[in-house]
Image (cartoon, rainbow over all chains, first blue to last red; front, side):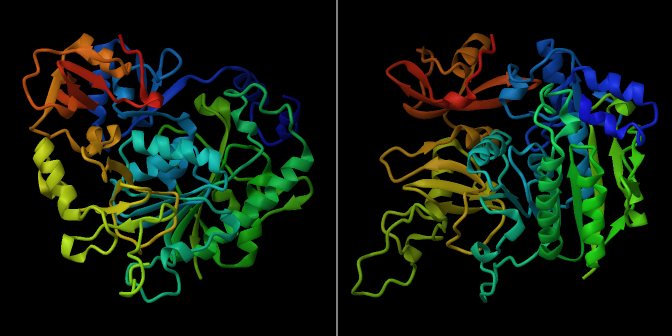
Amino acid sequence: MQPLERYASLVDDFDAFRAACERPLPSVVRVNTLKASIERAREALNAEGVAYEATDWHPGVLRLDERGPGTSWPYFHGWLHGQEEVSALPALALDPQPGEVVWDAAAAPGSKTTQLADLMDDEGVLVGNDNNLGRLSALRHNAERLGITNLVVTNQDARNFSFKPFGDRTDDAKRIEAFDKALVDAPCSCEGTIRKNPDALDRWSMTHVESVAGIQKGILRRAIQATKPGGTVVYSTCTFAPEENEAVLDHVLDEGDCEMREWDAPDGFETDPGVTEWDGETYDPSVELAHRVYPHRNDTGGFFCAKLEVTA
Amino acid sequence: MTDADSNADPPENDGQQFDRLPATADERVVPGRPTREEVVQWWDQRFGVPPETWDGHTFWEKGNGKIWAFAADVVSPIAVEGLGLRILRARQEHWKPSTNAVQRFCRDATENVVVLDGDEAACFARGDDQELPRWDGDWGYVVAAHEIAGDVEPIGVGLYLHGELRSTVPKGRREDLE
């Protein structure tokens, strides 16, 4: 818990924050509407006597009374996918449409990727990239179990993502040279996962925060370059450190090819604004439009989510 | 890759990339590669999956006989790790559908669908083989299904031989659902 003490000045009711971080998280599943309607999935859970409660902000995100969604028929059929509740936010912020060309820069193991596919109604092109080949097999397994057919899986360093496999700089009519939208759910120090992984902070260090922030800036910069003007880029992490959140946004805003955009969190989901001052640094005032999610507000993990529009 | 001149050996399947299937046999360049027409017909003939089911999908081969369905179109060949859903193993005498393809595309299947009762379905999902003398349909690959939440839903791919239904549910998908 020690590293979290540094955020006491940012968080209202820090005692409640600290207490929430010490409670385990409920098991949560998202209904995969590519394979079953929310009603049918819930009917199947009812028939099996699996107790759950729908979250009050999304009818297809269900909190289970007992841990582990793996052993039930609706899970076997790929109607459900285990996904931490708060991690359903960035795909909703990106709001991908059927037929668009969408990039998930750090996709594995794929809970957000598969949610993007669901929102796209499995139409268009969803490029799920990850630099870790081992984690890619989990992404493929999850996507196939959920019956997704619009996913292209790539294994590149997102910071230097190349469209070469997609026919970039050829005259092929089917080439892809830019994305309509991109999600950067960045690798991070994972402070917000403390409720899921009690040892998440064991190896926390300021050096790690600083080094991962460099990677985050590199990935977000590439996502902005690779997205068409007018397109949306969503940046998210599961951590609290402003160095990995607002500072990363400030870095790309400073380069001038994007602007922050307002995005309303779902009704019934409480968030805090991005911070504009931290540890002697000041950030672009528009980063206030970002959402900080503290565990005690909605009884979830911790999270950060921001929406950007590419302007050039 | 696709423009072999007449003196060269015929092009072969390259396991490192996805190649779009030729529409018909007239357009086939790589020997032995199934055509789109053959794939669509196979699903129709074997399981009664209507050909228009696939209107929005392109078909690709990566690896020897591994056929994938993708919901859009991209350049061919394309060197990526995954492209849509692996639906079928071809280039063998009996083509074998994948569990995930059957779950996704065989909801409206009308042929070779074995509807299992509760215990039989649980046995199948565990990956166990079972005697099933009541099936009087074709031998070979069948869709194993069961009733759930008001409708029949495909579970996976069975291999029916000599009165026995063998489960081909892959190890990573097996569950004990008793």
